[in-house]
Image 1 (tube, one colour):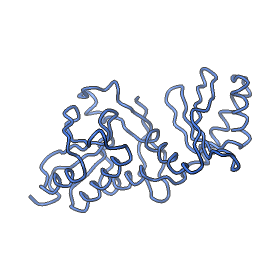
Image 2: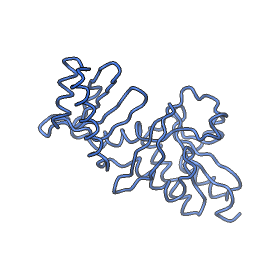
Image 3: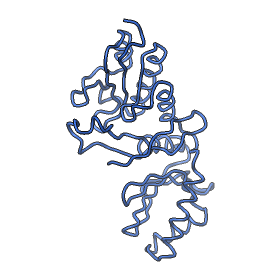
Image 4: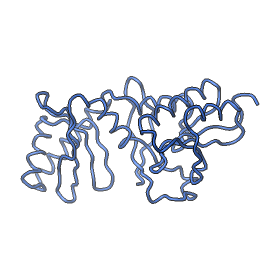
Length: 248
């Protein structure tokens, strides 16, 4: 069968299974060989697809998936994002480069400005306790600079840069407006800054929502981790502009 036949391979991420690949329609033999060589050996019946060994770490799974996507595109086999089927081929290649990218966030200035506004409003309305006020004041003053944020319902997760002379380059802040709580959940050493930005992309800014057509057929939707996507892509390597969703 000639490469570029009617079928395609769709890649996605599942809370229980990790990276997975779903084959649809007729595909050239090379597609199966590429998936096998990239570690997609195990059948995931509930996803009607193939996944990697559970012992393979998250970052290695992403690298394996990215390598498979690169090879499939070169072999002219159509690929797509299982969660966002309109994201295909070259866009999916860039998406997996974005997942591995540890550089600055392109919308960091907007995130910082939004965080300052939220904290200023909270301080003005006297919605925070003494410890929370101290942290909020640091955000407003610019001592703590929020570079990336993710919100779901009444909870916010912020990746926040610390002053340059601090022993930690980042802290994770958790803000719950309804309860008036603002607290640090993790301290990140300076040498791990790149990993911290990459982890925030993978765990917070990645779109893992089931497509509408598949949602009704989900075998175990209750434990699925679903998140909003990044608003825009980093400059190098660029990431795809995905739709904003929040359906945890």
